[in-house]
Length: 83
Image 1 (cartoon, rainbow, N blue to C red):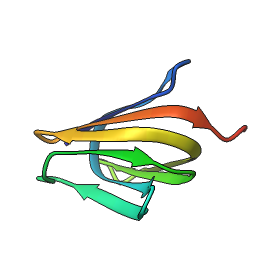
Image 2 (cartoon, helix red, strand yellow):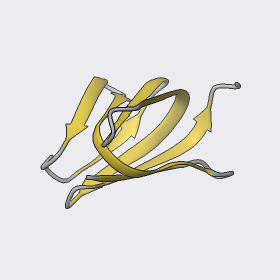
Image 3 (cartoon, rainbow, N blue to C red):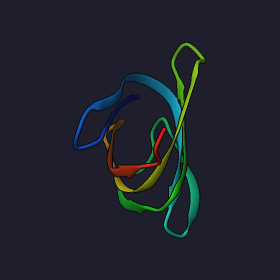
Image 4 (cartoon, rainbow, N blue to C red):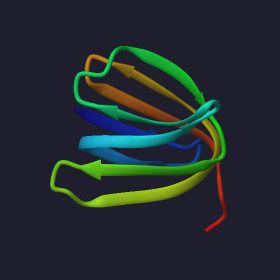
C-alpha cells in the first residue's frame, strides 16, 4: 500500500509501505494492507512507518489526521515535536 505523510511545511514520507502505527485519540492503532476505509483524528505520540524494503521511519507528532482508502494512506500532520 502507499503512504504520503504531509505537514503544512513539507512532505515527510511518500512511498510503498508494509504498515504504519499511529497514535489515535483513543489509543495507538496499526494500518496494514487491505485495511477498511477510515478517517481518524490523531493525538500526540509516535508514528512508526515500515516501508516495503523493511526500513523503519519514526517521528513524534502533536496532532493530525489519517485517511485510508483503497490501500492509499494519507497522514496529515498538523504539528510535530521539535527536532
